[in-house]
Image 1 (cartoon, helix red, strand yellow):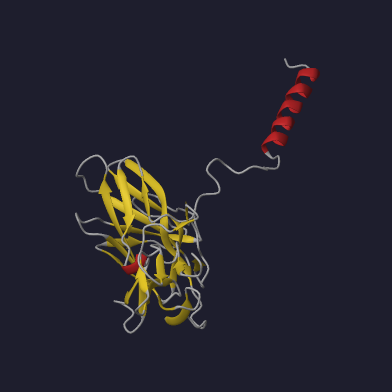
Image 2 (cartoon, one colour; image 1 turned 120 degrees about the vertical axis):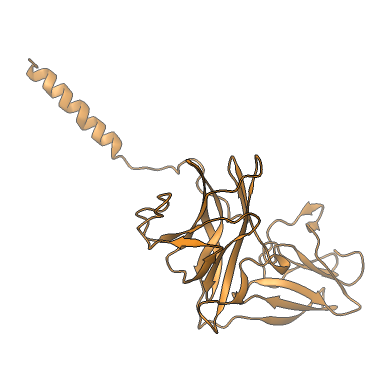
Length: 269
C-alpha cells in the first residue's frame, strides 16, 4: 500500500512534469527560419524543379482555360528521379487557401481546405492551404494554374512512390495581388549616370522580367554581377544599382532572377 508520503511525492512529480511541458518556448525549432522560397528542391529520391519563363519569370502568365477571358498564372514543375528512371505515383502541392485554382494537370485531384489529400493525407486539418495532387505522366511537367494575380511563396511539395512519402520546400502558389492596385507593365528609365535608356518590362504581378537598352549602350544578362570583386547577392531596388564611375546599372537578382545590366560600352557589366 502506498504511504501518504509516497503519494505526495508522486503528485509532486506529475505536477513538476506538467510545469515543464507547459513552459514557454523561447527558441525556434531546428531549421527555422527557412531561407526564401527556392525554385528547386531535392529529397532522397527526387529532384523537383520549377519551370521558369523568359527572364526567370515564375509563375508564368497565360490565358485561363476554365475562366475564359481572364489571365492566369501558371506554376509548372518537373519531377525527376535521382536514383533511376522511375516515375512517382503522386505529387502533391500545398496551395494557399486564397488562391483561385483554374486548372491542374496533366490529371489531378483537389481537396477542400482541412480535408487533406485522400491518398497521402497531405495537409489534413490545415485550413490555410489545400492540396493539389497531380498524377504524373512521364516527361510531362506538373501544372497548377491560378486565376488572376499570384506570386510565389515558400510552400511544400510531397512525392509518393509506393509506400514512401518524401517532401521538400519549394516556391508555390502563393500570394494574391490587389486587382485594383495599378501595376507597371512597361517603364523607361534613364540609367548609367544619365548616359543610357533602360526599357523595363514587368509581368502582370509587377515583377521585373527583362531589361533592354538603345544603341550605343549595350545590355547583358550575366550569371552574377561583381561589385568590388564580390558577387551582388540581393539587389531589390526598383531603380537598379549603378557603379563603375556611373557607367553601369544592374537590376536583380532576385527580380529578374538572372541579373540584367545596362552599360555604356563592352564588356558589360
